[in-house]
Image 1 (tube, rainbow, N blue to C red):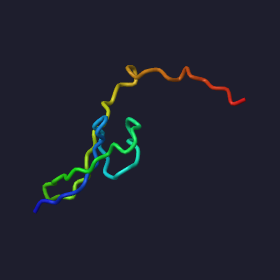
Image 2: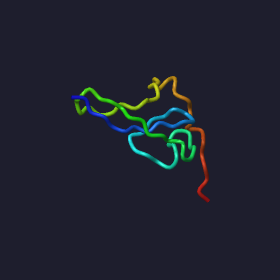
Image 3: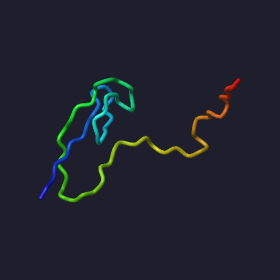
Image 4: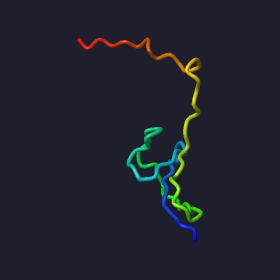
Length: 71
């Protein structure tokens, strides 16, 4: 027996969320998440969301140079 569940997709960037939010956590647009019905195969596997690709440490952008004074 297949189950259905609601998933929320951002109309601006296409990001997905398992719950409705007022603001998209990916692109920051307000009120852009719309509910969609997702049919699962009957198993209660966790929902897989789109993830960013993993980069090797040598290819990661360097952000350690940003130093801020706390005053």
